[in-house]
Image (cartoon, rainbow, N blue to C red; front, side, top):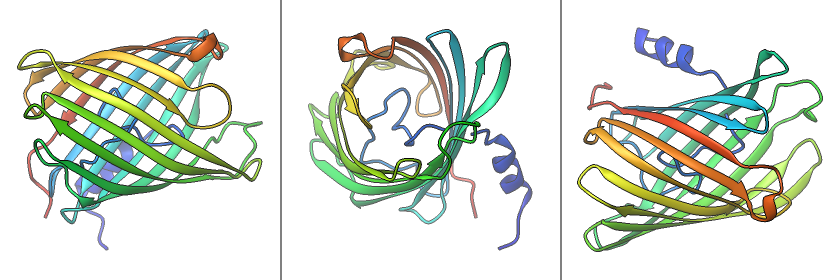
Length: 233
């Protein structure tokens, strides 16, 4: 495959990422959707928690019509310095695309790593099934995830799950809420607002999240999502 200028630009935009690629910002629970055919998106956000700030970037493209490929990562500012804290590559496909007042499901598979010293080394491997359900002409959409995570540092296998909702408040505003679990300990929860500055092209969001029981501390995040028109060959 010959590398073109836009491909170099895409790789240059990748910093680093979380254990799993997120659904459409600002949710962690993934949806049964992929980026439009021959199009790309860039999701970026800042997350403030427990005295440090994480900066994320996750570009994703759909080259074939039913395969969304995500590259991503994060930088973390702590102890007066900035360091790369995560890297990820993921592929997602749909077996049944989500339809209005219907449902859909797919499969996502990925590999992630934390390059920081003392992180345990190795790569985490994961897979999960996202399923989504549309109600009231898409004004309410529910998402469920069930999956598996292989922690290479400890060689443990973990069950992962998520349950989330998107509720339309107006033509450009949405309420999002979710709970999810990606490893050991109590589940997390997150609530937030999503606003379209330019419908289907430019989105901003803000969230508050925590762990049930207060374990692990709370966080706030703000994000920006950019979606391109069809432009890939």
